[in-house]
Length: 166
Image (cartoon, rainbow, N blue to C red; front, side):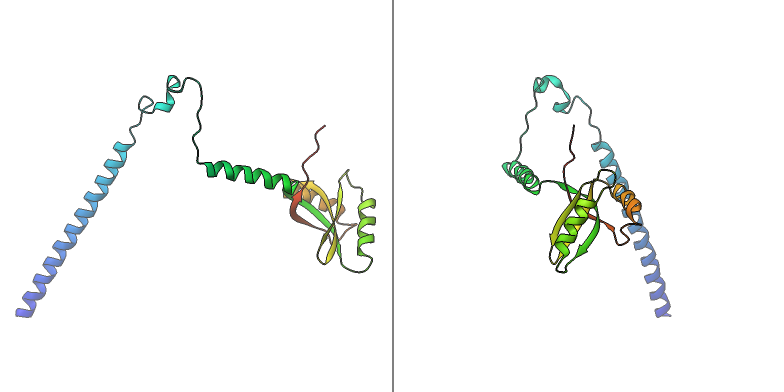
């Protein structure tokens, strides 16, 4: 009999504690939403940089000197790279004794829509890359045109030349 009473008491207290936990969790969530909603009350008058008279039409940029160093380094690397990442079509890659002369002959003989061909050496191969495209689908369009003449050609992501402007 004592065991049954003890079990009933434990079950009763367990239900009470569980109910209190749910109420506490619900109250906490409501409190958090109330605080978050009241913190969203920002108007244009409270923020100084919305008022043009605050800065008299001039913009002052305050930045860490490391940011300026980072930008200068990025610009220097881009100048050294002589291009940007884009896509080309690789039409040749060989490493035998006559590979260089064959690659140069392919470069000279390639003529498709006025695209430039480039001979590069990527150890151990001499390779011929064609085109300077910023988007992969543009390179794939060229690949589809030349696939019958160069069946082993495929697109690659590499550094391409800056476009020439007239």
